[in-house]
Length: 416
Length: 173
Ligand code: SF4
Image 1 (cartoon, chains in turn green, blue):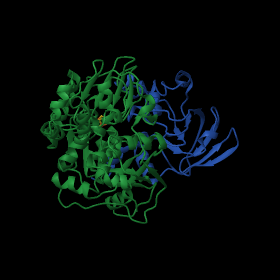
Image 2 (spheres, protein in one colour):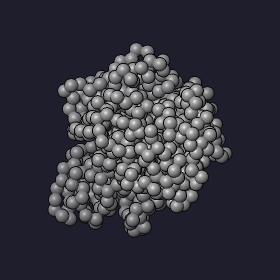
Image 3 (cartoon, helix red, strand yellow):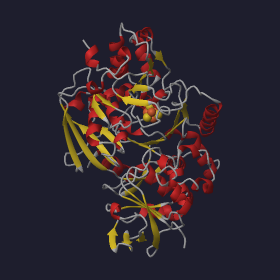
Image 4 (cartoon, chains in turn cyan, green):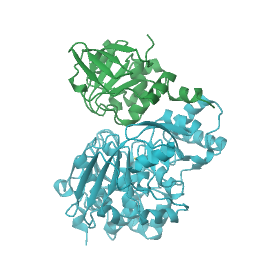
């Protein structure tokens, strides 16, 4: 069986097949400051004062509008704080960071878990062998009540990646290259399993980058073949009794793709689609106004580290705003200890408190019409960051190099 | 006839509104109407963001059928999209494929969907007769018959209960 088939089979106590509809118990139900208040409204509207199915399995995270930018957002956060108190569920407030990362760093997610939440990128939990799914308001409200939900078992695609990555080429370049090949509908309603020598050499942080962008291929979930790198992360984040999960040798895949990334150069997704991918060199020189380094896709320690390496002793170009946002407080503290904050602040970057920040509209950092941004986030649809703005998606290395030069720049040029 | 319930003999007969590939939820239900909460108000904006939104809203009749291409309902997960389509009187949405969350929202709000590989062969204005339980789709206008994957037992039980939350409420407790 494939990984998703194994997880669902265990959760519903029988052997499941792709395309089958099943009910399964969920291990964690997560809500965030955006979408969460609607869930509370729907829950209370339908079930009055009912308790949640298990208060240890419900988590609320604040990661989008933190601290609140206006009264409406403040009131929404107030609703969630009240709900958390009444139901006795754990709430991570404005000083923590991106929800999925917070769940992992707090040891709440284990391999084999089924996790649902109100964000579109819950599936990055596949990096540690958990099945994370973004869901709508009704789904979450129903699961809060009963602790179970219906699923359609996805078919699985296997992606084998071989070749040794050479800095400053990183996981983001690999996943953009795969997106270019599979396109934004290439994994529609499918699970993906990533494996191969490139994957095995990737750090925990790089694996998160890979898994997070399965959403952009319309995939349900992207699993990364588990090994010591993942177990090490779990152990150091208070997860006990780790039960590894990997696919069986005779697992059946709908399709198998193989990529060799040995000669891969830095990649960039041009406006307005994440699969509109070219070599950075092909669009080098294009003038930019803003750079964002962060998000659930590229806001971890390794991401900040490579940005710091490029920014060290340099200044952000006068015509560019560079905004750096660690994914979580833990990452921010590590970055501070490693001396990255000093480098960032001296380079002229704006460093924002941990969270989702410029991944989406609604947070300070919106573009004016006609402005161009290089972002390390995962989406660049029209209007994603303000009407008329254009967003390019790239790695933290490309983003940092572009911030220094003021034009789209391959990190190869600033790498020594 | 009771709309949106599934039993073995129920046949839906309706006129087709044809849409293309990758119709996202912002076209189905533009973001500027997200604050609306009244379902009949929401229905007044169904499909409004598509290239034929105005024509659709002026002429759509109760029982009509939407037929679309690949990845129908992609983009943001707003449930308003399914609610508005149902409110506009659409009995059934047939597409080559659906985006996962949109499909979930349809089941959860009791809007019928069927996946049909040959959806593109169906033309705008065709009259269809659809047996939801068996998945048989007769194109009366073109004289063709298709077999879609029938709706699953699980979807059927949720839709017949009137949506996910009603289903969970009515279940043993
Ligand atoms: S960074 Fe963006 S995609 Fe990731 S969790 Fe936050 S809002 Fe969602």
